[in-house]
Each structure stands twice: as C-alpha cells, then as structure tokens.
Length: 149
Image 1 (cartoon, one colour):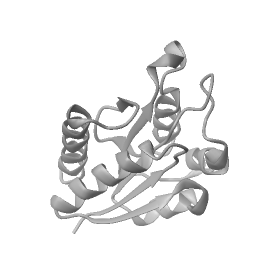
Image 2 (cartoon, one colour):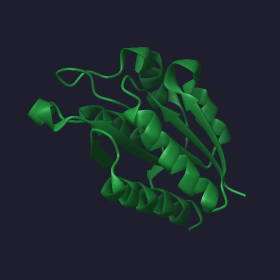
Image 3 (cartoon, one colour):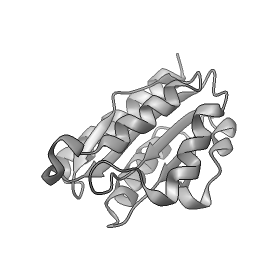
Image 4 (cartoon, one colour):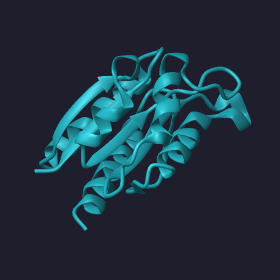
C-alpha cells in the first residue's frame, strides 16, 4: 500500500480544504494517508512516505507561509530519492504576478530533494469549487500513477 503525507498551511481554511480533497482522493485510490498542518510537521516526515504533498498559501506580495518557513528551509536538505511529490494551493488572483507563488517555491524546493514531480502544480483561486475539486482529484490520481511506475 502506498503511503502519502499531505501537509498544509492555511489562514482562511481554503488550503485545508485543498488538502482534505487531495487526501480523500488518495485514500479512495488505496493510499494510506497522513494529513498534517505545516507548523506541526517536521519536513523529515516525508522520508516515511511514497507520495509527498504540500498545500501552501501565499501571503501578501508572494511570501511563504510564516509558520512554514522552517519546514520550507529544511525540505531541500532531505534525500527524497525514489519518492513522488506534488504541490497544490489556494490563492487569490487579486495579487496578480504574486498569485500562488508559494506553490512554485515549494515545487522548486522539492526538486532539490531528488524526488520526482508526480503531477503538474495546481493553483486554485480562493475556495475550491467543483472545477477545482476535479483538478485536485486528477492531481491525486496522477501522483498515484507516478508512484506506481
């Protein structure tokens, strides 16, 4: 059975919703899933998972979640070779060029770990609607497919 770990950071609850949707789909696909909040999670916990997911928010003008800075800084130093990662997050298009930039920053940090991207990054505007749920379900499915190849 594949093990997945979904880590989220949220202010409004939207990214917890994103994490819940991804977690539910991964479970439906037969994965054993752990879901945790970023400030309560050591990045090294990903070493126990086959699929590693981060659902971050982007604060203000493109800033990472403050409560996730230690996690973010520790991530690139891990050896996650053989693991699959994905990043999906909710943001607000109001911020223009800074829209959901934390998603890209976390993907870049994962790329330094030796893990392989299992799905294209997903950026959701505000609260997940039905279209977003469809995107997130496809995201989770792609992660499982990548982990079983």
